[in-house]
Image (cartoon, rainbow, N blue to C red; front, side, top):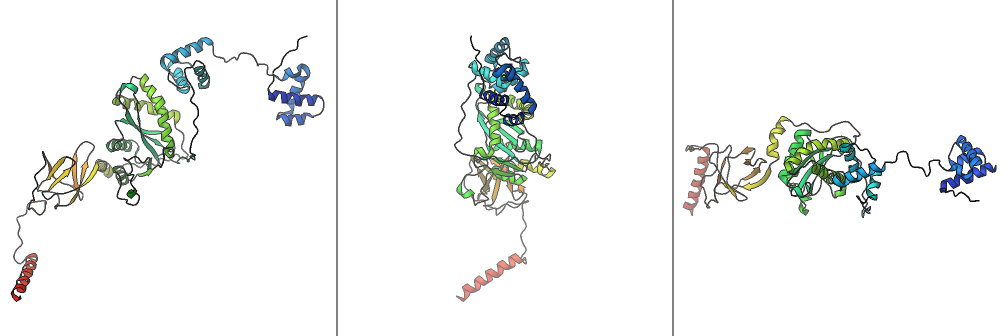
Length: 431
């Protein structure tokens, strides 16, 4: 007579031993229920099954049977065919979303993961051991309390265009992308344009958390103690009342770094499917894509308060001047100012008196206009076609109008001059 082979798990073997002791009257129902963390009613059911069928009574009836929710082989073949043709480099999560959105095929991401691994479409990456411990920082409480900002250089359009930079800000309290823009690089002008657009859309945040890239902070030993030694970005943000905070490591602003990782996977593929091939098209695509991204990945803040400050009329008027590249220069002896390879001749009529060697500020506005600032006024000038020859103009100062007035003989200034001249003559005569 052949015996039936029964395969049992360790938990089922333990359960069988306790029920057997219960049948042998070595345990009470309440004791068995406590040991197996079950109700007394369930213990009585198991006791009855073991009495009737033995150990087999503890094995689940569906074991060895095909699941009612198993995906049909034809559906699996269709899914594999679609993924290989359109989503071959997609991860399981994004591929599952695209199958549901584009093909109306609903499949769990874990199920799809196993299918893609089995068919060798996707290879899971091994986990990396972190060399350094970084503790988790609690999110800010309110929207607008702190923005994390960074730029990411990447082949965002793959081989359809050159590498470009995605400038991105996310709200620390919600992980919501508050503004995003593609540009050629992360230079000061590009960053200034980004934040002017941000302020126009959202208002002024309380602070901005960013790295120590040279655009945002002068990484020089003397910058620690010299508060006047700061970058264009720090100056502009201080003028509008936004506090820039510099992170000491990429991990410190990990939320924006993780968003970049997600976008480098998802956004690149979405723009490929949409046929995006230029920076202009990519920026237009962001307007549609970012709201969908925020809906999926943003979180609710602990407080519903919005701490963004609205721009006043006076500040709006000053923004072009604040967000200009400002460089200090000195007025030459011929009332010319040299800036990079350009030369500016100050005109004789000025809104206020300008002397030789006076310090002025050259403002490069984002629209390309050059202005020369001096004590709250813009000076009148003409750009010279070439480098001027060195000369010393006898004019003592440039003023509002030409003055032909001469002080009279009894003017205090003339009297003082005559007294000094008389004393000097007396001294010569006595000697």
